[in-house]
Length: 292
Ligand code: G1P
Image (tube, rainbow, N blue to C red; front, side, top):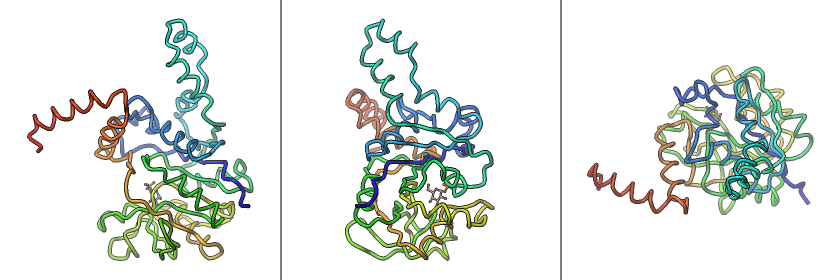
């Protein structure tokens, strides 16, 4: 039996330069999609996939994230006194979603380095990594964990992107295995379009065996002078199989303002309490703008 996948690592130390001016004083992970910060969607996705223990890699000025997942007894008491039991329960539950820990990266040396700081916490077991910029509506992480149960190998989420966009991502060459799974044969971080081996882009979900930590330790700075997780994975490929879990929709890049708007629309339409009024707003806007 493979060991169960219990732990998740969420790198959240970045400066958020793609979402300024919002991210000047507020961490980009706290960007709201309706009434929940992005980091809450990410953590809920992990918990729904069976994760019990979450390590968030942070940096300076990110304390507000800790507060969001802490109990807030005073607020709970005020809500209860006002007869708002449902709201009080929602706030209380946030403090008990999972066993959430924080560690500081200290120096911004790259995604690979950030994941490497989780070594002591993760220990010798498989774990997942969720990048906070990528919000998913599909149960991609769950599918990856199921694949691990079958193959006991590392897995990375992959999605086809238009050819000219591949240089914004890690890129994978792969062979089909069956269903959503492929076997990764090569990896390049942010290749130029002309040399990209495919249009399969790495999206922000990874499942690693603990051997990734030794590979990270041996990885030299790559693209942008940073220690890249993609380079560590390429090196892992020489000793262990690496699978790709392919999917085609339901991913939102929170660093892109247009994708953020798409997320607000799609998540808004999923919300039973808001969808009826929101649909009317959208129909009215479409008519007013002559969009159809
Ligand atoms: C990171 C990874 C890249 C991956 C991307 C997904 O890049 O390095 O391989 O494709 O996340 O969002 P970043 O967007 O941090 O530059």
